[in-house]
Image (cartoon, rainbow, N blue to C red):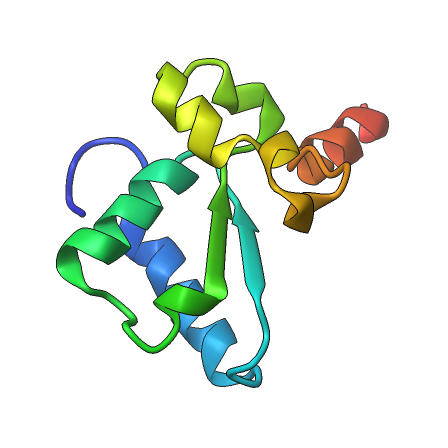
Length: 99
């Protein structure tokens, strides 16, 4: 949680706020550069136990190929039907069009 790099607690705080305003029956997909680590942290530390079953984690297309093979098998967006054809790089596409 406090290691160098991306701070996971920011993401957990945002997800907690979001989940408090959504029905419990909803399934929430999260495509994130370190989605695999976030999912493992939720399981290891038992964060948000009410919402963990509702969250589906994935790693965006650009970042997934830098991860280990097992991570690619579990968290690749094309391996799960919840993502459709989303690549998780919407913000990057938007910003590249502004330049």
